[in-house]
Every structure is written in C-alpha cells, then in structure tokens.
Amino acid sequence: MADNIYYNELTGEHSFFSVNVPAWHAKGKVVSEYPTSEEAIVHAGLDYEVIKSPLFTTTTGLISTSTGLEMGEKNLVIPDFYATIKADTDTVFGVVGKDYEVIQNRDAFSFFDSIVGGNGIKYETAGALGKGERIFITAKLPDYIRVGKDDMIEKYLFLTTSHDGSGSITAAFTPVRIVCQNTLNAALGNLSNAIKIRHTSRAKDRLEQAHKVMGITAKISNSIESVFNSWTGVKVTDQEVLRLIQLAMAPNKETIDFLKAGKKEELSAQFTNTCDSIFEYAMKSSTQLLETTKGNLFGVYNAVTGYYQNVKSYKDDDAKVKSILLGGTAQTRTQSAFNLCQKALLSGVASVLS
Image (cartoon, rainbow, N blue to C red; front, side, top):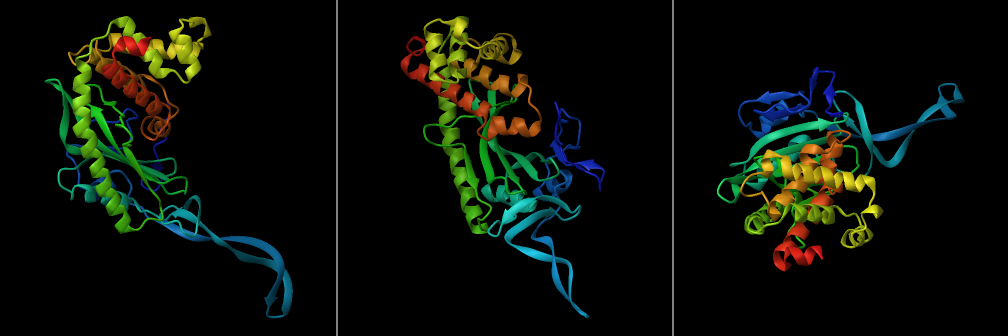
C-alpha cells in the first residue's frame, strides 16, 4: 500500500512526525516527547508558507514598442482566479477564487491550541500528503473514556485541510481504543463528531469554531462512556455476532431483506467476504477476547471498527483517512454499526435480527 507522504526534495526528508511509535511506512521523524505546536510544525516538515498568486495567460496580439505597434506575446491577468503555491519550492497546488483565504499550517496548529488554551493537548502525529497540498494533525486530549475496569479509550482531535482549494478545514473528535487503536467513530443522535470551516473564515470565526469542537467532545465523551458500558452488558452468541455484522454492513434495504429472509444466494461475493473477514476478526483477534468485548454488543461494534482500522487495505494514507474520518465508507458503516448496537440495546437483539 502506498503511503503518499510528501517528500521534500529541498530538505531530503518526508513531511511526517510521530511520538514514540514509528509509522508503518517507516518515514518521517520519531520523537520521544510530545512537542509544542511550534516544534511539531518543524518535526513534521510543515514549516512552509503557501502564497496566493494572480493567474496570467499569454496571448498573441498587437503590442506597443518603441517603433510602434507590432505583433507579439502579451500577458493577460485572469480576473478573480489565483494559484496557490508552496513558496519554498514554487509547487503549484491548485486554482482558487478571489475569496479563498489561505490557511497557513501554523494557523491550523493555532486552532488546536485555542481549543484548550494550549494546556494538556498533546500533538501525536502530523504531516503532509501528495506534494504538500494536504496536511493532517492528530492531537490527544486530556482524560479518557473508560469502558469496564481496564478498557481505556483515548480522546483525539483530528484536523485536516488542503491548500489546493479542494475542501474545507475539517476538525473531528475521534475516540481511539488504546488496546487495538480502533478509531471509534460515533455520532450521538444528530450531533456530528466533526465540523467544517470554510477557507473564507477569519481568525475570530476559527476561534469560535474551536469552542464548538470542544463542546462536541464534551457531549460525546459524556454520553459515549455510558453507551459503551451499557453495550458490554448485552450478551450475543457467535451466530448473532455474524448476523449483526451483516446487518451493519448491508449497503441497502434490499440486502437487509435478503439477510432477514435467509436468501444467502442473493448476496454478492464481495459483501459476504467482507462480513466473513469482520467476523473472523471478531472471533480471533486478541483485542476481541477482553471482558469488555467478548460476546457482547461492544465487541460487535469493535469488530467493525477494527476491520476498517487494522485489516482492510487502502490505496494510500489519504484514502484511509477519508474513509475512516471524513465521511467515507468506513465511517458510514461504523456509524451504521453504532446505530444498530444502540437499537439492539434498547429493543433487544432478537427484535433487531427478526
């Protein structure tokens, strides 16, 4: 699997850093202590500026010279359109409109510092993808979500933004189960675990959004501990685990109808193989044999999240991030698993499966 980590030819280094644990792609810098935001920017190779430059086009026509009018080339400004450019390498990232505001990498880290006043937040990974046009930051928040006695879930904030005009700044709250590093996407009710900030926002707006993110983390953290602990008390058989996985992974109502009618022959091979892989993970992974996950609803949910985090192959890091954190297939299916487990808690497993 390709990693798509940006390699800076000027410095001869990859734009990535992590704390203590080397990344699977073995690129970038590993540091032993959590850095400040200023240090993290340097460690990750994100200490570059992005400029917004007017666009020109060249045309042939009459131009004025010292001897009069002659045919020649002349540059014309393209109104209302600009190129975003990596200043140190002159790499063109993309084309944007007149209202687009460049969010420098240091601004993204300032957003994080604003959330908790810089106190207690720990920058764990950061880096750039492609040619440096997309950056990402993960930071650990203080405190934990506790499931059972010993199953701890760390609280992370993830931020990504691009410099090519392809999207907004996205900040998401992401609970991560320590024992297997599963990203436990879960939005409670109508509360999303992410916010998007347009590149036209001003500093004041970004600070207000920072407080909004902190409100999201507080609400989800307080609720999710109760939900997950409730799930651990709902026992399920191995066969029920498989059925719940299949329902959570069903892409449409037709598939659900086939499952409930027992029409296995109507299911696609890809769907069946994916569900079988998740079920195998549920039954054999050491992280699924803990008291908090074995034979209960929390284990079903973790099997789905664990599959996408630890088993499934992705084209590159960017594809994995989009799938798991930015509304892609993994996030959609894990949210489906969350909703299904919550329904089973409230209505009973038999009711959900019938």
